[in-house]
Length: 231
Ligand SMILES: *Cc1c(COP(=O)(O)O)cnc(C)c1O
Image (cartoon, rainbow, N blue to C red; front, top):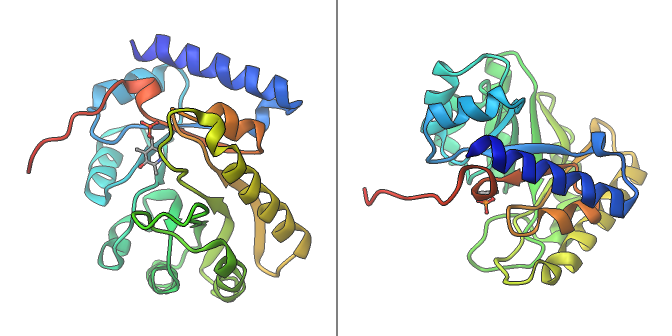
């Protein structure tokens, strides 16, 4: 089932690129494997997926231990500062940097490990109360501050758009973040190399690609519905 779903998602990505006149090589699919077992991840891996997304530190580190080494693990969920230590050298990219304090913690732990951590700033474009992330109007200030941290590399921006019935409703959100992203690229801030725009999930990734996404995070569309245990 995973294989067939992947074929469908890839086809849709290609079509969205075609509609937008974009080179499909600009868009990378992240298979969001949270709550899903290793054998399903292996199935996606066998179909060529190398980028997987997890939203919990423990789950990411456990899967990282048992699955192939060439997988790039993306930390996409809210990250608590006391867990940075465990994930900073396991995640290829941390998408969910939503505060200066978190970025400072990443700087500290990356320095200890003598590495540079690649991050995205999470932007709460729709200003939803329930969501983490910088307000768009505060993001440039945050970028300029974090850009001075020697062990943190800002690669771009991430957003989680609202849950909507019709993905077209999220087009203005994606458009707005892309405009800001391009604006930041033009400002050429030292130590910032903005090349990543992470937006779009199962319900809206095609619209996100049309509006400039370079990373799309698709879970349900590949692995099916998630079931959560009551723990
Ligand atoms: C779970 C999750 C996704 C994937 O959601 P689907 O709707 O299943 O594709 C994408 N991004 C983030 C941040 C998530 O937590």
